[in-house]
Image (cartoon, rainbow, N blue to C red; front, side):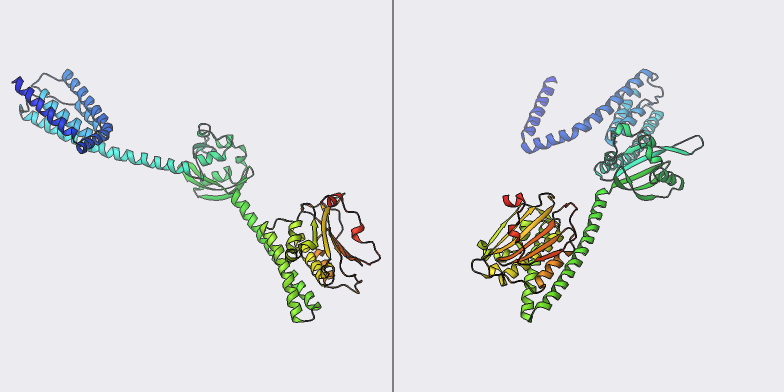
Length: 496
C-alpha cells in the first residue's frame, strides 16, 4: 500500500512540475500568488482564531455525548468576518467542520448523533451567516467615512484657499469666550506666522492673534455667526495683506475659509490707474492734434501744403508714440527720441548730423514735446536753414546741468546754411515750440537767430526730476546777441 501511495505521489509531482513549466500558466500562477499575498494574511488570522476557539472548546466543553454550545467559535467567525467576507466564511466553515467532526459525537465522522445535535449545527450555521452579514454591513459603513476623510484631506492639501475649523470655548454661563483650532489646512497654515500644525491645532484664536478680539471682521463677526447661524462673507486687511473670507456655523463651532487677495487688489489698482492714464493721454493727444491742425491750417497756403505738413507732423508723433509704447509709457531715452524724430533724415543725410549726449530718461510728456520741437526745427532747417544748403550741418547735444543734475540742456546748432534773417513775428514753428513745452513745469526754450544759423536751447527735467526751475517759457534773441554755441556747455556735454 505504501508503495502504491509513493507511486501516486510521484505521478502528481511530475504533473505539477510539467504544468509549472508552461510559460503562460506559470505567469498566471505567479500573478495570482502576488495578488493573494495580502489576502493570505487575513485567512491566516482567521485560521488562528478558529484554532484558538477550538482549543477553548476542548478545554471547557463537557464530555462528548452531552450538549455542546460551540460558543467559543462565534468570536472567531466575527473576527474573520470583520477582515472580509472570504475570511468570515472560511472561519465559519472551519469552525463547523471541527465541531461536527471532532466535538460532536460520534467523533471523527460526519454522522449525526441525534436531532438535538443536528439542530445545534443548523443554529450555528444560521448564526454565523448572520454574523458575516452584519460584519459586512459594518465594514461598508466604516469604509465610506474613511474614504470621505481621505478625499477631504487630499483636496485640502492642494487647495490654495485656507480653511480652518474652530470649536467654541464657553464659560459657565454658556457665553463663547474664545475659539479653539480643530483643523487648519496647509494654505491656512501658510497665512499664519507660526505654522507648525502641532502648535496650531488645540491652540486658541485670541492667544495666537490677540488683535482678533477687536477686529470687526474677525472675533466679533465669528461670535455673530455662532449666535445667528447665518453665513457671513467679508473682506478685510490684516498684517499688510487683504483677505476675503467666509464663515459658517458647524455644530458648536465654525468653518472659516480665507483667501489672500492682495495681488488681485494691486492688479485692480494698477488697471484703474492705467485706465485713468490712458484717458489722460488720449485727451492730451487729441488736444495736441486739434491744436496742431488749427495752427497748420492757419499757416498753409494750399490744401496740398496743409496735407503734407500734417502728415509729416503726425508721422513724427507716431514715431514718438512707438518709443513710448516700447517702454510701456514709463519713460524714454533722449537719444532715442532725437534719433527717432530725425530718422527719415538720418537715413539719407547721416553725415550732416552730429548727435551726442549721455543716457538720460525723460517722462512721456517730455518725450512728446521734444519730438514735436525737433520735428519743427528739422523741417525749418530743410526749408530755410542749414539742411537747405549742400554743406550745412546740424549739431544736437545734451548734458546735465552742473549744479542740478536733474535738469537737462539740449542744444540745436545749425552751421553752413544760408544767412539767417531776423523773423518779423512768430511763425508756426515758434508757436509750436511754445505750445509743446508750455504745460511742462521747469522747462524753457531759448531760440537765437544768428547770421550763421539758428541756435536753439531746450531746457527740461529728467525723470524723477528735482524742483527748482521756473515755468516754461520761450525766449527769442536777435542776431546781435551772442550765439548759444559760444556759451560754455557742462563738462558732461563736452565729454559726450
